[in-house]
Length: 153
Length: 307
Ligand SMILES: [Zn+2]
Image 1 (cartoon, chains in turn brown, blue):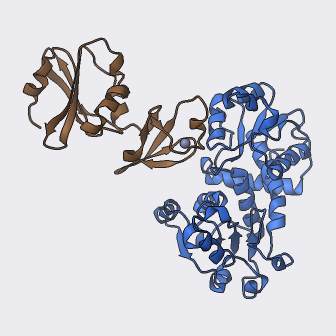
Image 2 (cartoon, chains in turn cyan, green):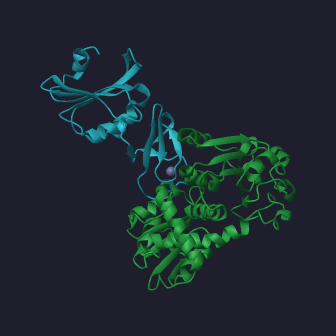
């Protein structure tokens, strides 16, 4: 992995989080899932940047914020390639991939119109039943869908 | 959430299945008792199903319990827009057990999450119907004297038929051999065949309902082939009679063979089979009473065999 210091410095970040290698088509979904719209800190969002691995990628930089793992993992389904850099005093002090949890709560809409989750005010819940390729199953109606086809709420 | 709930047959272990079969046998020998004396059971049928409701209500009545409930959602506040959660929480104040049927899939699972009162799923759309599976298992167990090492032939609509899917899942513990017989459009879904491969369960798959397969079978499980399942009506017209069982087809079958069908049937079993002692579908429905008595007492934490 190249040292991204130059690129990360676009909005010179003293402290905060840089989420890199987000596939371009899902960048704004990722922004929404992470709740970034509601933050009052400096946020820099780049998209369609060159990436050797992905072709193009998106990147999100948030100043003075470190996200709990459970929040970051919300984007694992749509952006399994994403890498999270934790920055303290201009240094990358942590670097890790997002991880798909065993259950996904409140992120995916069930594709079955007769599912209780589409007819009752409640959170959806999916179990990850396959990881390569990703396959998820509705906890309620057992409807199964490929991760890449999942509808994000 | 109560761990005594029964939402899906996949929620219970091999030992729990066998325990329920023991109970069912006990209730067949002792159908009337007062072990539910003082208990109140709700039967909430958000979607009407007279057959299933009568079976559950008879099960409770014969054990001396009391019943409250409704037989279709039009007579309830659900029709005024009340959420399922609110209905369940309201009813849970009054009863020891809720038996529910709902047209929405996953409704019973959700109900277990909003109350500590145990829930029995009496059918949630096309999803699960575990008491049907228990009565099928009990019928097999009773007629064959065992559940293990049997050859089970499933015929008709194997694609949408939830009863055959649940039965397949439940039999995974008992070393079955399956024969799947259906037209191209209604074959067993790949996920269930994959499940069999992963579990090392033997199966064959044909479009031909031949005597050869019949003669190898211990159980033939017939299902309804419905016109509305076909995208191509010509295909329906072509196949509708290919999966009908006639008495003459049973001439060389095993003496212990039994024919099962979840009922109601249309024309997939010719009426000339009804008088054959191998026809078991009417007694099968009667076994539902004992299977449901077993499920109800388990849900209430009452062990009839402990006395
Ligand atoms: Zn669902």
